Length: 296
Image (cartoon, rainbow, N blue to C red):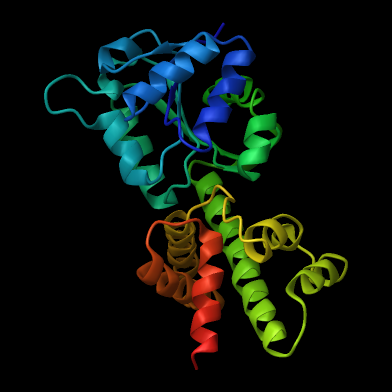
């Protein structure tokens, strides 16, 4: 049985790691919040660890962290002891499931290879509900087929479907572009709801019509009703992370196409809301945009 360590036990990582444990993998849990790691380890029958030395016999490390910088710091950063990358056995596989910058993913792959560690990128889509049910969609980029095979044996515990996207970094490229499309749908739908309300339309009725018409999307089916109209604001996806992901997509798209006018517009709307609201659920941006429209 593959010995797995899971780094990052937040909104998505917590339920994802639970599914790995329930699949029967021997499991270590590591998080900056050490108390959270201990509590989840007790629940899952896993082991919470704090020291890099605890990774010495691990076959597969899964990372689910906010940014590329967090991932690099977790794996290669250590001032007082050997880093996790230095401790891992030769041939170990890191499955990088965060929403990271693909250019930095390629750089990290090179860094890890100097320690005999192989990297695949495998970001996810499906939000918290599908993380809990183990039915996430996963985008897998890998240069090493043996490493991909090791990753797949663990990913199957968390996924309904794994898409092979190509070489290292292509998974993170696809994730950024997917999140740009989702963010574009959210910003466009929010603008439509605000405009409709100004013209006397009921917001929930608009959502129902959009969801039954050609404007239908994941946003109309799962986000607008509960988290915007009913103001639950508990989608599990923060405004800083959405803004960060669209920023990655903007960098990728500009590099590929030279310009990215739609992505720039979406990024601008999100950045405006983020500056005003800070670290909130991304669905709270709607209220900021609505208030700005009302004050014009």
